[in-house]
Image 1 (tube, rainbow, N blue to C red):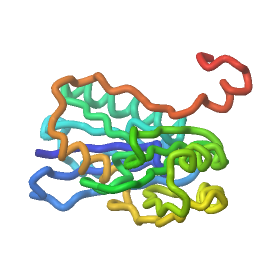
Image 2: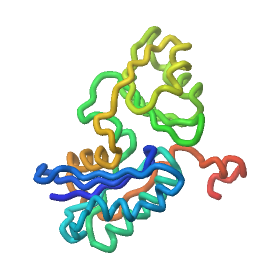
Image 3: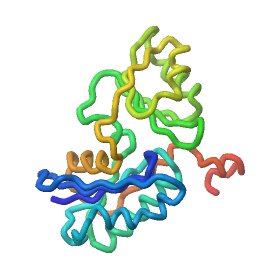
Length: 221
């Protein structure tokens, strides 16, 4: 079964076409720069490479957290294509896209949004912890649960929070991404879960109040 996957939350806008049975080599495309999001439809056409939407089994999209604008546009593209082609739409969290399948032990997954702000999901310290905010705030929340001199396996980009974690006695063990292209990681995760029952029950996880709303004091603006 063929999956088309999109992601705009994890850095560059990316698209991927992959088969659940590996019958074709994955096709991927990424766009960087200010016009990356505007070129999204061209990238989708590039990875399809003549494959009609009718030949797809499903579409997957990264649901965040991460870049606010990129997330909104990727979701719009994915929902529009799924609706037009009457295809199931699967949402994949940015945390899941950054973690290798079957990760065990105590680990944290970091996702960056605007400058100086990140979100983290921590597993293995009792109840699951999810926090968004400054690097210091993330480190403080993790340190409140971790044992002194604890070693923390980290996925995603933990560089911003690593100094703050070190100041609190936590040793950071940074891991590389399982898939370098975010959209391909989204596709792989969606394949493991299988085709979703519903087509459009996908919602965004923005992680934090967007900067413009935070300044206005209205989280709904």
